[in-house]
Image (cartoon, rainbow, N blue to C red; front, side, top):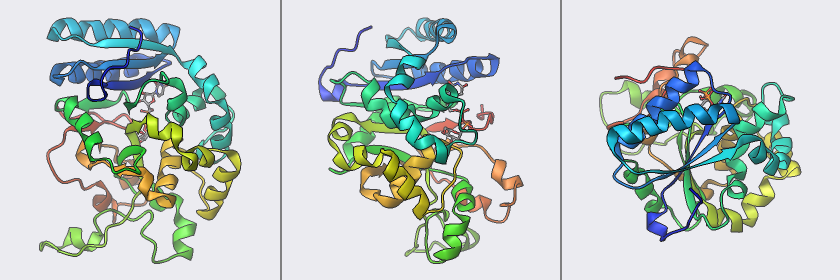
Length: 313
Ligand code: UPG
């Protein structure tokens, strides 16, 4: 289906990347598609960034759910290599700082598509949400789109917090130099976590951001001099030097730094909309503080089974 812009409020675009499929990725996509189709009460337009081989299985898995739940959904496929081409300058600017093995261009490009998604999307498209395919819905995606109404005038993106100490780890040097910083600290301080009493005046930390669910106001992104300038190589170098930052999580590392530097650009989506499940850091040197990072209050609306973690039944 070709993209046809409709009224602002009925523009329900969801992007998902599904490339280099294998059995495990197929299983993830199946759960993602099933949960999305099952709960949705709106006609979403799914934009699937994929390759020739993966496209076949994506369509089959999706059709199965659409037929089963008797819902109508638009979908469009995009070629991942064509998309990568459109953002190659961004990938080259980012790769040295946010990739663990700079060099494998196409596999890397996949992890930076979000930063140039405004170039990949139809110029008429005003907004969209990008979702990792290891995500499972527990509610109607309409409610997630409602979060756009909470954006302030400056917000370009919406992201939920990272729920592990990965940025505490990466910012080790910066935090040693600036001992009072809350960058890389857990949202809820460990002291509060241990206390049985509710604290009224908590100084929250800023753990970083997770890119499993990213909301985009394309119209504002395309017009934001500040954002577009900061995608350029010189700026990326400057910002990474400031934080002595060497990451490995692609776009989400950059979003995290953008959030530190320009907090107004990012709407802070509640953790219930991206309840990550990866506990890798708990067993790798951070068992004492892990729980403070992992804590997320409220009824989970979206699970994110990152680092191949199973989503609870
Ligand atoms: N993807 C593919 N094919 C691949 C690899 C990735 O289509 O071969 C897509 C897919 O949609 C996937 C997404 O890219 O869900 C992200 O990759 P994934 O392997 O799921 O990353 P994880 O290692 O599970 O997650 C880490 C972080 C997570 C963050 C993600 C992307 O834990 O929070 O969102 O990296 O930076």
